[in-house]
Every structure is written in structure tokens, then in C-alpha cells.
Image (tube, rainbow, N blue to C red; front, side, top):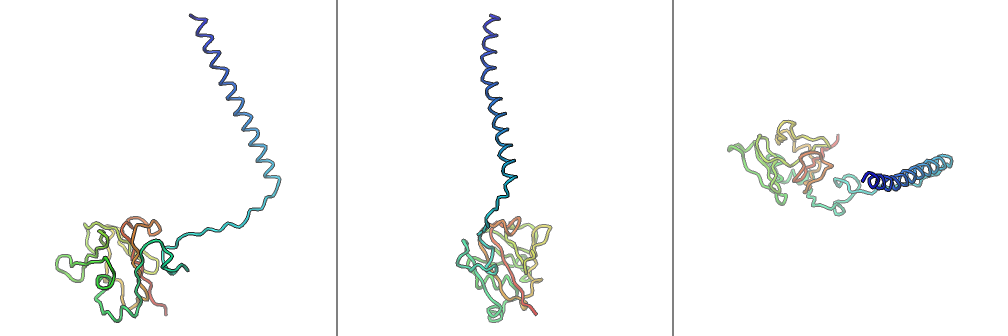
Length: 183
């Protein structure tokens, strides 16, 4: 019995030695190839990265973006005479509804695609609001104070639907981008 066990151990050692030898040869060949590549100064070609920009202002027209974008300019805000940005979104953007939380018209909850941007804690947040590229959602609770966004200073507002990691955490339903006037 002892001699049979010795035969199986020696038989199993043969393929292991062969595998180790093959790995050692492969490692030596890889090192030689790297050394040869270092000696030759190979020039890399120009690499073009083509991606989808998060908004129309990044030299990409809205019709080329793979998600729905609704936009309005400053003249539309002046014609509408809305109380704040949330009221304008409710009146003119498809899929947006607002309701006055606790009967207060100055604290509206904005719902879009099942997600909420609210000044009160406890809602199902999921909309990110940016003014000139800076997120205005509060850190604690992800709330949005709509009255702090001056509608007189708005040059353009865009509503982007869908989850996009470009806009950060908790942007599950979409993003609202506000650009202000200059000068």
C-alpha cells in the first residue's frame, strides 16, 4: 500500500513541475519583451475621447443627448411671472407637479418621475438641483430651498430626466440645472 501512495504522489508532482517551468518561462519572456519595449521609444497616437456631455452648454446640442432635456430661457421666466423656479417647472415642464407641503405655498414639494425635491425633510429625494454648476441641495436630508434661487437672475434652466452619475449621489430621477445671467 505504501508503494502505491508513493507512485501517485510522484505522478502528481510531474505536472506541477511542468506548470512551474512553464510559468517561469512565461515570466522571463514577459520581462524580455518589456525591456525591449523600454529600449524602443514607441510613439503613441492621439487618443480621442468622445462622450456624452451632461448638458447642452458643453458644446453638445440637446438633440444629441440620449435622455430627455427640457429647457427654458430668461425671457420665458419673465413672461410666466411664476412665484419661484418650482412653480415655473410645474407650469411649463412635462412630468413635473408641485404641492404645497403643510399648506404653505412658499415650501413646495416638486415631484418628477416619482422623486421629490422638497424643502422639508422626509420625502423620497432623488432630484439634484445645480445653480451654475454648484449643487444647492442641502447636505443634511438633500432638501432644496426654492426661495433661495433668484428667478430674476436665471438665464436658462434645464430639466434632465434619468439617473446620471455625472450629477453625483442621489440623482436618481433627474437633475435641474440653472444658469444665471452674467454682468
